[in-house]
Length: 454
Image 1 (cartoon, one colour):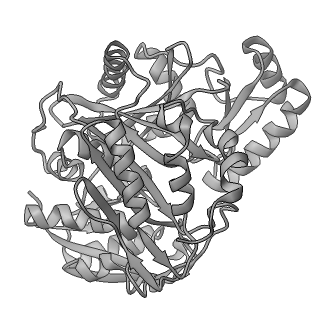
Image 2 (cartoon, helix red, strand yellow; image 1 turned 45 degrees about the vertical axis):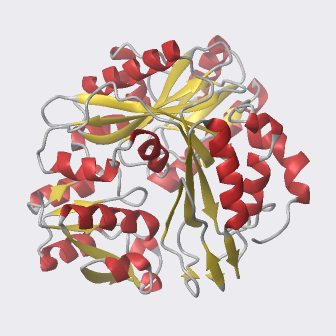
């Protein structure tokens, strides 16, 4: 096992990795921008190195600064967390050249599955169902028109190199296709340095179901069940749960088997996620693969009892998987992403936290880097905390989440807590009737009356 690792990230995920390292007896190095000097991941790491000013391009995306920090502190490995450089194969290659271990998958797998159109082709070769659409990135607007005519409107345009909703456009008819293609390509180019776009048939009200997988360097690959991630805003997840209320045992087996088959096909190592769309008839289609730990990984940890970050560290250190295949989940878990933003307008709300009282009690977990008097910087994503609950079944988990949200007090900034309170009390959510369009139907009815702050 490693003696010392550097965490190339910030916030709650950096703190989460530090916690796993402490339990494994691994010393940690935190990197931080000047805006994060007072963050808890800096406080609790064994060593810390400032890598630049607040903007992420000058700090958390500065590969040379991070590698220099690893070298001067003698870190043997780097954990990238999620976001920032977590899926940057060039960063992983640079670490390898410096004889520093990358805690993540091989760069061949990262490059193959990180490009969405290539990942789609790979899924086809692995025998995993995909939506009708383009085999490769689109070459022209004429090609897009012809293909859209074949698969039928609506269609969705997606950035080959991207994710998180950037470079993504839904096209309802031929009149808007060319303009939307140009807009998507420009946005993808600005966000990812690659304007390539591919096209798929758009499912109107699908569910977003993802499977957690683990693979080691000995060819062992397992899945640890699914997470329901359908409640989203602009393709950004707001609430996740495990298991999905939509899956039968047979469908869960089929989807899990497909996820493992695809991961094996690309010789995948470490933690990753295979994401699917599920239509109303029970047919599922590969969407993408995330070659990193996910924000929502705690819901899987809560229902399986597996520490996914520890598994990442052990796999990267060359150990065999210590989790047996066919692990059965226990109970039900739900995660709410508590963001520093207005619960109705979603306007970001950086600033000083005046009061911070997280909930506790049976079955409640809070992953956060925030505390009273902490200042939320304006430079990064708005995540303040992840509130995770576990119950014997879905109904107990929902009631437990209601209680935890009512006991969660954050003052000084706006947060999404009032929105989450409304979501978990919504009748359609309570019976599990959700889709990726849940928020479109929910927001006009619910958030108009949602109280501000919390």
